[in-house]
Length: 85
Image 1 (spheres, rainbow, N blue to C red):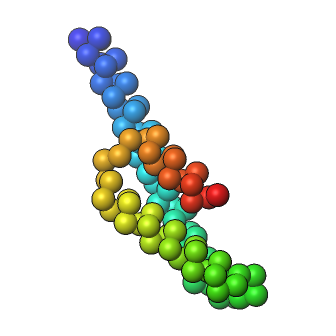
Image 2 (cartoon, helix red, strand yellow):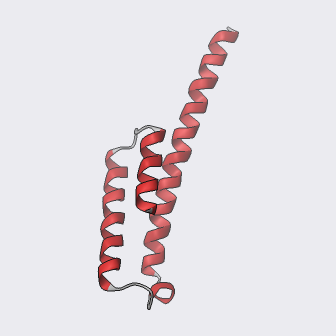
């Protein structure tokens, strides 16, 4: 019985880490989207090409998130790293 509890604890921990990684990516994407829409913050800082590049990255990540609800922690972390760069 203790062995089963330990196994479930490991699975629970892995699930928690996966969920936290997904939420981190979602939060970053939506924060970036909101910042881009806040014209006061970015009015003079981005040219049209940069803005378009960021908008496309946001769109791609949102689509990926919608299609990959069950992705593993590493996939979410990799996508977060990519969009941050």
